Image (spheres, helix red, strand yellow):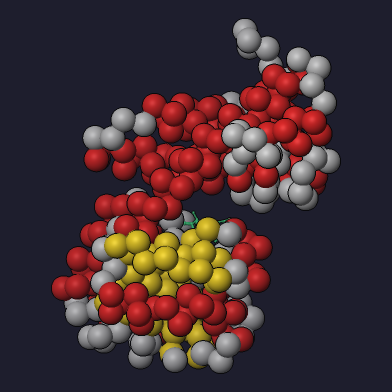
Length: 291
Ligand code: NAD
């Protein structure tokens, strides 16, 4: 299949390389002139898109997605498919879907979970929104780039699932970190804390699979000096999108709002920039009730 791939960054490059390794003819474009193994480098969006049966985008935000879609969609043939794998606001996903529809192009919003490791290993999870026919056409490509794809509903449903998931993730990571820091002050051994909580009602992915305490639980960024992993600034982005969506939908999300405020403070005013989002634990460790 001829595939145009736009946005060969940390995630896009390995995803495009996996499609090429599976035998697809992939033409890739990135403003930063990045490349990916096995992918033909295109000099602009038009060259990447022309003649493609499927175009995949993996871009930083909704504004850039809209720009790229403006250039790409008029060149795409009727019946071809645009898959946006970026994490963007629900409105940008839905507007791009309408624009694609008007051009006779199928559209799926398909943000991912699994990070850079999952992109390289081809083990991402895709959360997809779009028509049945669009999802069916995209599914074989999801199988190459990932291990699971859930068809969540109509256009925008993939982005909705992603930001709800990451709102839970941000909130539970903060709760897990503040509890560890409190346990320290109560004289509770971290390993004992893990042994109890990971098998009790406080368990979560943050505790059990991505424990923020170094040397405790499975291997995680905490064991590598909090090198991301999933950077705190990306958590700020996703929590910002969840609050934007909550405002648009009139949803009451006080915990999500507080998680956004804390991660923003961590990234903008403390030393959180460039650190894994589980580095909230040393942050809480260094604080008292008054700081
Ligand atoms: P990245 O910044 O490494 O890659 C984005 C790429 O898009 C860059 O190479 C940039 O040059 C390119 N780009 C920007 N504007 C462009 C344009 N107009 N035309 C062509 N290329 C353009 O980011 P990433 O880590 O690869 O993340 C991509 C998306 O995936 C984001 O939406 C992010 O939120 C999401 N995501 C990232 C992770 C992660 O762990 N990195 C995990 C899940 C989801």
